[in-house]
Structures are given as structure tokens and as C-alpha cells.
Image (spheres, rainbow, N blue to C red):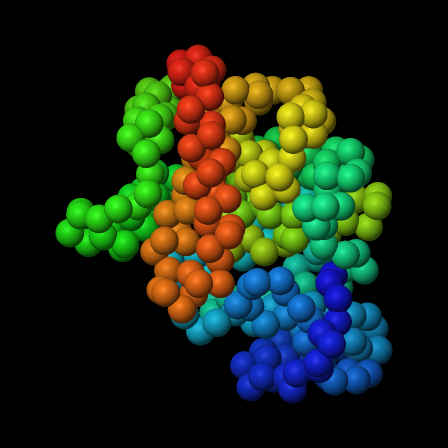
Length: 309
């Protein structure tokens, strides 16, 4: 599922309690073949452990006690269960109300942006998993509210409504136009991952499984595609592969561009709303997000893309 940590951390008290709780309904967890091993989980604040037993291995995800804004543990569990049923996520074994998840272990590394860009077939596999998810006809019990989240993060940054978020007047205009046009003609919503960075894709070279569904909800199908294109730093040719591999190009390149702008703007607003201690670790990423949003806002074709929403 990901690499073992170079330093094996002692298992946390919450992780121990989670294993004891899960073992009441899953006795196999009482037959450990070794201590749970902490796994690197990128920049995530979650604790992830590999748990080896006599009947197989599991992944134990223990989140922080306090969830991030807009994370709904109930909906996350719905999404993890859905992905498990659809065959595009690890097998769900147990989901607790506090966000602790126990899933089957997957012997596949997470994608990196570099690996994604170097392998068109990896892009195709990601698109295929999204096509299964979006085309499932299933429902999640909340909607991912793009503009409400942007507004909330900006209010958190400037409660008085005053202050500089570094957005140009052009970017603000494009965002508001997108808000209005999407409200007038919304696309049918589909179950969506909503945080589809490459590291949330486990890929063994033959299939791609999606993990970390904390922000999942019903959303415009263009969002997941745009988020992967943004976070994978895909170029124009690679974005074409992504779109053509997803339902034969149902999402247009122009719509993808507008949604990449929305994704980048949300990510930048989120980064600015963090405390100084957190934000200092992410300045390059935040600036890259803003640069992408501004570049799309200034594209000569952006008004055509907006009109076609």
C-alpha cells in the first residue's frame, strides 16, 4: 500500500484500541504475526499501519481526533464501502464512527506525479477507475460544495471581509462567472473522490485502486479528472489521454481547464487559511496552485470555455 517507515514508530494508543475493538467482530486480528508497522502516508496527518495476521494482512487508518473542516466520517465510510463493492478500492473490513478504518492490505505502491506522467497506461487506469465510480449510478449522502468551501476558507482567512488573498481581478471575475454558469446548467452529479492526488491511487501496473476518501461526495464528474490533471501536473497531451480514456472524452478539454482553475483556487484558499506554522511548509505548492489558476484565467479561450459550461 505504501513504503514501510524507516523508523518503526510504536503503535499509538488509539491504534491499539482500534485493533482491540475490531478483533471483537474479526477474531483474526487476535492472531498477529508481528507488531503493527507504521507506514508513511505522505503529508497526511493520519496514522496508517500494516497489520499482519495468520490469515492475511490489513491496513489500519487512524485519523486525528479532530477532523478537518468539510470531512464527514459517515460519508467517507459510505465512499470506502462503495469503492470496495465496485472493485476500485481496498476491501473494507470495518469502519468506526470516529474515522478509524480497517481495510484489506494492497500490495501496490501509490502513484507519484512523475510515474503518472511517464506512463500513459497509468493515466488510462486512473481514468478507468473514475469511469467505474462515476458511472455506478450510486449515491453518497452529501454534495461536495465547491464554491461554499472556497467562500468558507476565504472567510476564515479574512473574517472582516478585508484583506489580500493575492487573487487578480481577472481570476475573481472568472470564478464568479463559473459559479453563475454552473448554477444555471449543472451537470448530473456523480459519486466522486474529490481529493484525487496521485498518492491516493494505489497502482500495481494492472489496476488502480483509490484510497483516502475523506472529502468524498456527489460532484460534477469533471472535478475528479481536473484534480488529477492538476495534482499530477499533466501536460496537454497527457490531459487528452486522461479525457479520451474516460468515457471517450465526454468531458471537454475546455471544461477540464475551468475545473482545474476551480481546483487550484480551492487549494490556494485552503492553504492561505492554515496557520503560519502549517503554511510555512507549503509555500511552493500554494504558489503553484495560484499560478495555475491565474494562467487559466488569462487564457484567451477562457470566455469560450465558461460559455460552454
